[in-house]
Length: 203
Image (cartoon, rainbow, N blue to C red; front, side):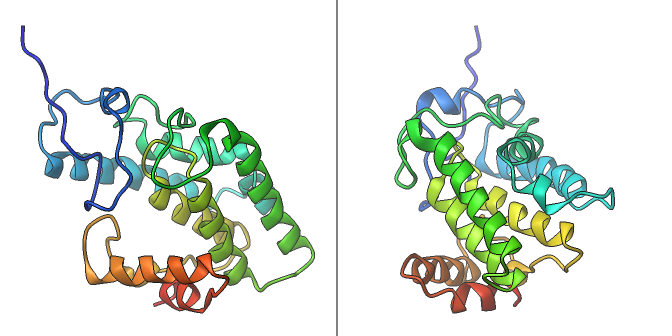
């Protein structure tokens, strides 16, 4: 009997959210044995979801700002990689609300963004950036929360016929200077200062 090994890390640099052993067992493709292979496979999966999210089929912001769309987007981003794609995490992580609060917290954060847009509380770029930040804090999925929440922000911009963010024009899933800038911008946003995140998103 051959026992398949799974990569030690779920994805990306050491500061990314770790998977517990049960979550790691959810790896779908049987040929993946290294972190590099996992990264490449995930990127192909995400590219297909990106095409779907950015499609020209008419999609309203009211559709994007729903828990149903949020779950479907995560599922499409990772369904060829992880069996739990689109399923809320059941474990605690180094970031995020308790697992039992995910459904309510996610629904509230999406509703907040809908109110910001309807009442023009912020410019649309800032609404998208604040949405991304709030979704990161909820951290609803076992993994892929940063990539998913960035695409959620882009999908909102697309629904409003605005250009998507560039997010520093870099791969933020790996340890790079751009990732450090991004994390610094998120930490500033934690304290209510969104200037760095807005500048990074359009860099």
